[in-house]
Length: 408
Image (tube, rainbow, N blue to C red; front, side, top):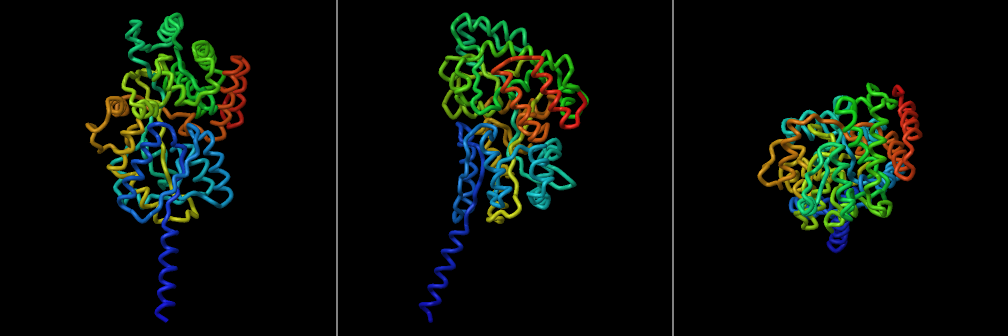
């Protein structure tokens, strides 16, 4: 009898051990991203040493491949325990309105997050009076990164305007340096750069209007943005189609290219590579504007390890978690009560800009428009890179807007 009871107890222990897992789904595999995610895992493992973390990453910047895998799993009734999703329209339209997520309002209240996270962030994770995901950071998309040694060698200043950009690019090209490092392998990178060009020609209010119907896609300033972007493409590396965003950044590290327009995950990449010779300014004509996005994680309905997910979300939203993660990632915390002295120079500057610059939502990273619109926008701009036809491309952008109920 005792022997049989021991067998039953042993079986129960094994069952509990097997069940004590946490699957975290993301696309964080590049330098800076992977290190930031590991910091979160380290904190979680210290608090919950009996939980096995399954790091279910799918490589590809901005979730280029991961989102398709996630959609298959969610629609197939096999959700990961928690998954990375851009706060804003990507979160709300894709997963909340369709009934796939559990609300997290009680968690926000019990953890005190509503008092330490800015209203702008709380608003984009809200729907029907509930909070639906935990933002782990705030990223800035409209940054121009540059190799300081190259700029100093040729007596150049970081460009602030489009005219200055082309002047610098021409001088660099004459010296045999790639002016603008570019990677388009995953399909989203070109649209990311074009997003900053739209901001530069339309301004904050005009750019926001593209996604609300206040600005028409037939606007001459959109035409201007396409013309400027076409001109920019004359200064990129010829192998861009074979490079991802981080492989484009590698050209900066190697001293082969001088500039790159990318989000501040690039800072995390540079730091992960031990490269300190990078400088930054805003993308041309983007002065005083903060193109924002936020990575977040939520609780899918039917998550196999629900309590482990809630514990992980607490780590994500904690002061310790946000400090450890963002120092590595290159972004800034979603919390406002962190120790700023812990952060490198770039993040300190971004924290200051967040408070004083005009905020606009990134379209390419899920904050401004639903995922279906983002996908169509991305594909049109990818085609433009291969065949820069301004008139045809603007017509395509007008058609996409029409499909989404926006004025032409």
